[in-house]
Image (tube, rainbow, N blue to C red; front, side):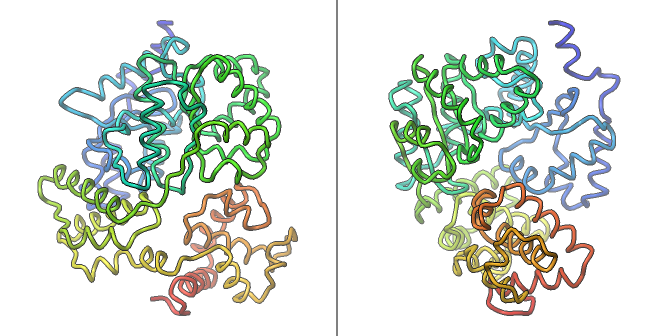
Length: 473
């Protein structure tokens, strides 16, 4: 065991030169971005194939993850090629949380099975760890999510009271936050496993290929609390659904608690076995609705206060702007926080608080999206008209060149201009797989850099869809 623990991290002499990494980040990402977001990142520990770094707030972690994580990983790989992922910890200098987190990681490596929080050993998808910063205390409630919050709290206090607990709602509504909060509150006295449906699928396939299905069953059935995020991604995989069904029954029989999240109610799940949907419906099913104005304002106010505290009054987002964002961005909490992030970035780069008219420009695409309620069907109609093809041709399985590019463009614009998930977009294009959606987005992204005519066409289509006009604004 001692040797395994020693091998899990890199010796001090061979550690990455973090000052050199920071210097490269400043050179490649620019002085302004480095000073605003990256300068205070600290290297906590380097392991065989990933690094643990610390930042001072959840907001900074989320901002870096959504905008700069890929570039930072590539820079780190210049100094250590075997690094394939980055993990964050929020450093609380009052209680030395980062040190505690590091000790927990070492404990996991030393004795995986006995750890309260179980994860599949040696998986490169161990990113879905329970986050100590997503708890019940910082989950902001309103009429739209109050029932889901109370049900989650009840499960945390009385295991198996609602079994299973099924939470559903749109993208960015706080489902993962609630699952994380449940796991966090129960992990001290229970064996908790928190996993995404996609990771469950990955582990299932990996176990079949390596003839380790017995281990797979032990990992997932030897737990007290099973939390599965985004269950809708389990669609269409019959063998995996069969295994999940038996795992589900085994856990229910032994009195374990199961909590599931999805983007739709059980009866609306597509390509999921009826018996699984029936099991889900047999527990407590709670939806998280779109946030009302009061909840949106509470969230914006809370995030703004956090930012002002962190930046020591360097950031000043006044009440008028807070109210404007809360009133105009209605689609999801994630987009609401994203809108605030844009304004903060503007304020940091230009060293000024934007006026209301400047805020309208900064958030122009989000505001127009909210007003026009862009749908995938409308995008398909506009793209078909532009390329002079029929919608039946676009949705057909044919792969003629004159059809493939418009189809990819429509998929790309659906990803860019709607909040639909990858599987939802795939279903809107004649039940294509979500990997097809990812491929189309990557292809168009690449071609936009190489083909000026296509780039102009995409911009023209985007403006036609959003603003009902041809020329770029």
